[in-house]
Image (cartoon, rainbow, N blue to C red; front, top):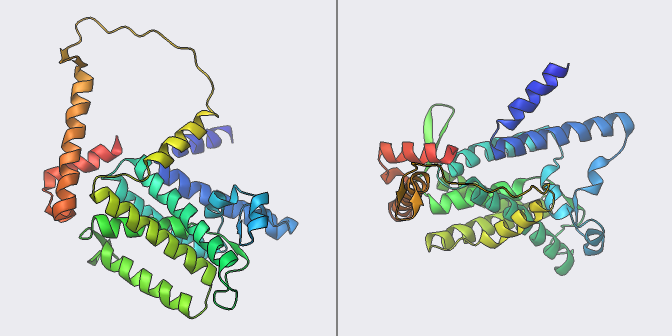
Length: 291
């Protein structure tokens, strides 16, 4: 039993950040299902996002935690499959932290859009009362980001044919707008649209050279640093014989050149699309995304 637990810990530790997010979502779903079935305890009620602003004040963490709660098997399966494919495309080209920014900012923006509609617009126009749950807003943000920033990037479906992500995004947006107008699950679809808007805004600004998620990333780094144990400072001496290039170590010089090459390739993608890359450039980005 002990070895099995250690094996699971090892496998979890070797997953990338989105692999861990998918596993956490699955564990939360199973845990909530068991508690609901056996103990009749609605564990999720403390983590879903309430539509009423005063209820939200009592559980502000729900603006993020609602993205880890799902209502049913098909709900979580669809969201996690789409997240898996979108994250794989995005992290092959961009820093994992930047992709995380898009995902979690999409969840936050989708949640804010949901609460805004529920508390500002009349109930006769939009029926968004209740609670919001699911990672769809974050997934929607990633989908729109990829569709706008890399409109010609493709996914192979059923190992039979290729479809461009921009076409998938168009289908999803039209579907969500139609369902919203028909009055079906309006709160959920409002959150989707909030995610689409965030993804679009992020991509269009990044094309102009501005990363709108940098402030959010700094905030999250600072927040997470509160939970890290303090470590004593160590004096590090440069090893004898280590080559330097204009005040840089060889490792720093290699890192600088690698980042410069990544920037040049991303600039090429923004101007001509992902498909304009050579095979060598695609392989280089793929390997860089794994580092």
